[in-house]
Image (cartoon, rainbow, N blue to C red; front, top):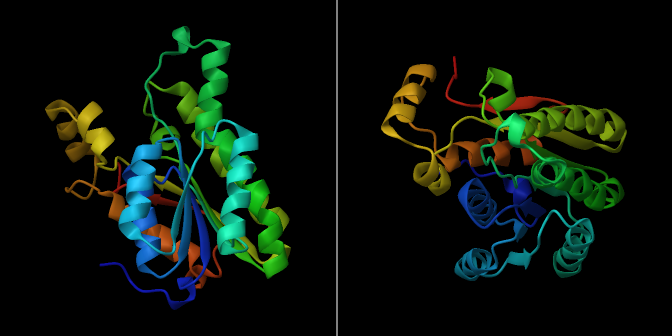
Length: 249
């Protein structure tokens, strides 16, 4: 059970990549706070099923976030339905493994679009709402991958490093408008995707060795920190990166 943040009730929150994994837990967690939650995802089937299950106050828009015009149009529809957006969680990403020597220019551009470009344009789309409202909070999702030197996905690592620089730049530029911008860097979170694709017995043993906390981290571990960062309980925090990795050493 997460803490209750009264200021989140009726707050309009936008979540990217909300149909599954960490994103779906974010949608559920903010809905449980009484926020009005709009979420975007390319997976229309999973997105609509989640919105239908959660009911009033939650709205799904199918959107390929790599297509900026469609992203902006989806944000406009959510704004029309719920009102000005004052909370943004840039969660969508894809950690597909790849090798430097096999990356083409097209693949590079597509990975940047999936893992960073949409964060830039989602923030651009909601910033006028936050300025007009006298404040807001953005949480951009980074990763511990570039921090601890995990290999096998160099474009992903580069994009997640970019998120931190982007976060600090926006925090500086829009702090005078009372807009807070922070990054959140998950460690190895046991989503269904991770369990299916990457969690072998050998990998789990490595995780056990590297993490100070000897339990598997779950999506709710990330959602609890995200709730705090969007809430005014974190009103003095901006330009920071919160690492939630169980103590990856």
